[in-house]
Length: 329
Image 1: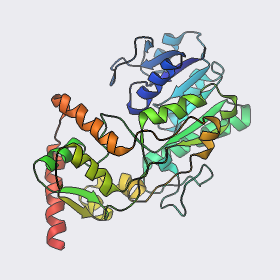
Image 2: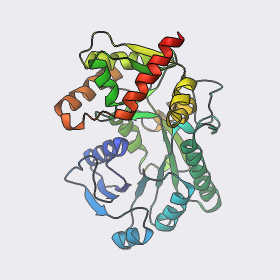
Image 3: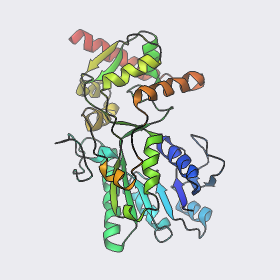
Image 4: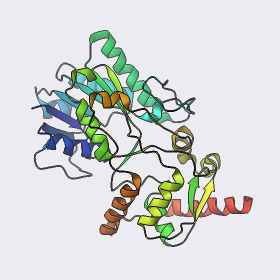
């Protein structure tokens, strides 16, 4: 039985991985502050501590060791430095969740592979993930840190809408109001359900062949953005959504906070080669395409009206962008 410590464990991706680890019979513990975003299976041990408080983590863990430490909450080199102080020497495998957004943008060629250069001049989040990887690769080369790096792309579950406005977009669709789509909607976007991701991820845990390696985990499903919005509209019971296509640069001019995620990621067609991970985890494949994923998302939100939150600022922003686009057109 593999002992696994998940740092995080209740997010979109990590919750699915925790469930999968439990189903495989692993001994699973989760370290977080106890404010669970998603419920933990009853078999999971919850260790409450703030991962940003190294002293609290040391106190909570004592002298315990784990076969695997899976880090979902490290975003900067400083976070990694703390982790190395805490976990180096007490785990047989340290798994870092990086990001496929770290691959060069715009991509020179697709599909992207693990040998594609890491360079994203548009998004600080991605540059920080690259810097984290640099620290870990150096530690592996210099002193044999048993690290595995995983790069997911756009991974979702029933609670995560992949559109610019989240639930605000669904509310606008149902009200017959315009919904903003970046670009012309025809770029291809690889989107992966967290349950599929978890199959590949857990297959790497405790696997000696994964040590010192990086893996892209995305699956093979790459619809257009028009299809993504169309499937959401169908699931929401909307016959014909009013989609307004706007250049990513224009959206970024109206909403600078959206610029990095668009220009540094979503504006480009992104296809990935997942053959490296399937060599080690042959059962990994896409089983949930987004037509089904959209139905699961809408079923969840319709069953939980308390989660149907409209962002009033973004709602007003979308009205301004739509008005500008139509007057310019």
